[in-house]
Image: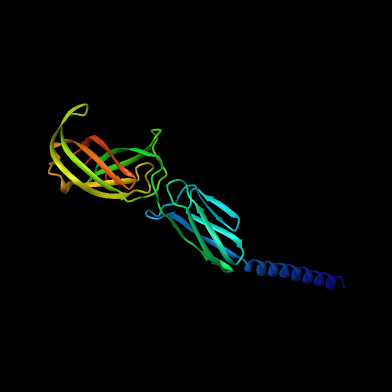
Length: 239
């Protein structure tokens, strides 16, 4: 008799648990999940400090490009994205269905915030002379968070006659536009350019130094800097 009562009790408990589980599943299935990634339009990089809001819920992304919201009622919902300075705010209305809804967002870059000047460095590698471009704000601090924007890089390269602290410009070796590329892993110098050795009439064995004037052209203005100790031969290990 006791065993029958025990078995009956177990069956009732299991039945209640299954019913609760089924009810929760049905309840969850009534709602939607909105997920996806938020990236810079041109670089595909994550944007540090971007905030996204849906149905009164919000989150901030710092080290990831991926976001997710759960328990979103089906129907029309507004997705609002508030980026840090430099990117354009994004708003989109979507129709949420029960289950997963993937929405990937690319934010358009607008400008480099508080850009006042550039500082440039060069590295001479096997591929050519790498030009590193760093953005500096009005306080003299390097800007670390900024969008990728269309950039045109023009350089003039001269042979240097004399030492770094006492020199004159020698023969002009190159003048023109160089290839621009983006380095996502760099902290400050994400914008870089490369001048191929094939463009420079120089002999590596002479171990000469050069002077390079760098000009960059952005929609928000033109900026320039000079590197006066450019190695006119490959140095160090290739990146």
